[in-house]
Length: 343
Image (tube, rainbow, N blue to C red; front, top):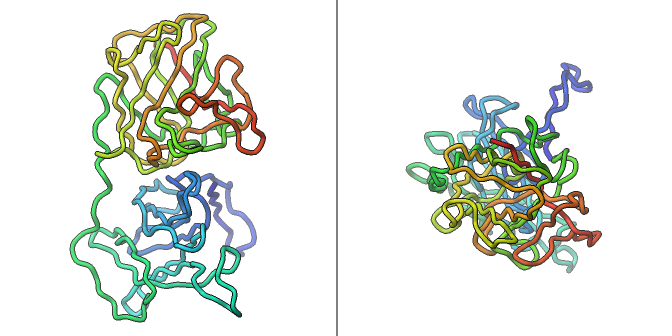
């Protein structure tokens, strides 16, 4: 998690509250820089998805945001799971990315995660202020700079969600509680109770992230909120489909029995909500068991749902495909964070 606080002029005391900053795929190692009136947050990313760290970045008009995710700056280094960034802007007309790998051998011992070596590459911006993706090289800045031409390619088009559902992204980062009054919720304090990010590449990979539940009263379905975020989002190769099944009857309740296609742009850890006002009415019956599912490509780094580290919801269970989701350290059953609202 990333925290932000303003310092007083003496640089030893806080001048205001400590704030949480939620940006997509954040892991650690933030570097804050400013160039031509725009703030850049460059940080180690992607470890939540079980990958070696990459470098991602976001931009904002002020240190407090709002932050716009700009995607990956460079990938993992080949010899260490960690990579951190430093940015030097416009030094004698040239900008640089400083990072670390573990490429050097010292006294006959090869580099490793605990002994890192510094590397540097030329860094370039396009006319819109976006950073050009960095290709890591052995030569680094020993060769003359070769500025790219044109503009940095835009992030992938996420596609379109089914018109029968309205998708609202990142309504609240790191949600302490669910907004409003849910008719049913797996947890009451999402941020505190469900810290573990789970994606389609967890535990050998899965194509379905599932949470079952049993209403204690009838619920005319109006809205669904998930505590979710991160990933590369949807595009032509990575899709998401939202499903809600009556387990006992074996019937799909959304999208005329086919579920609903969902378009998703990478967001920070926060609320991902679905409004069903335009969907034909669905009534969840008291005492019946239902399965809420996000379907995607196995091993794709599309999105992470947030899960607990213990069995926090007694009326259901979470599974990856048909395998029970369990906390890696304790081995205890886990649950995904979700809330249902009545129409």
